[in-house]
Amino acid sequence: MAAASSSSLAPPAVPMELHAGNRDRLVATLRGCFSASLRPLRSLVLLQGGEEQTRYCTDHLELFRQESYFVYLFGVRDPGFYGAIVNPLPFFFPGVR
View 1 (cartoon, rainbow, N blue to C red):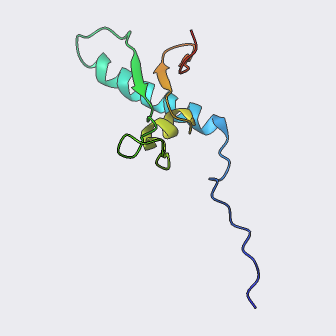
View 2 (cartoon, rainbow, N blue to C red; view 1 turned 135 degrees about the horizontal axis):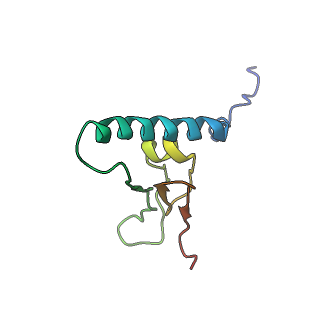
View 3 (tube, rainbow, N blue to C red; view 1 turned 30 degrees about the vertical axis):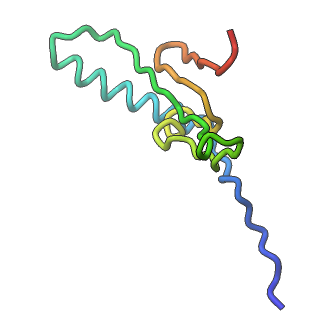
């Protein structure tokens, strides 16, 4: 008889420092591109995360998977988030005013 698997559907934990490093590398790349042009060095990167989808206008929600680049930069796996890369890093939470 085969032993029960201890696998989980949850992704492995990733330290938030990894995502901060990813954002820092993106900012460094953008600064390098902008410094080579006449554009100003001050800019804003605004990204929208994934949204939950329903199936054919019913109450059935499809299995949500966050947009890969959003997870890469921010580590957020929940739907409905926006992220902006400025200093300090703000988050725009869905439904919060």
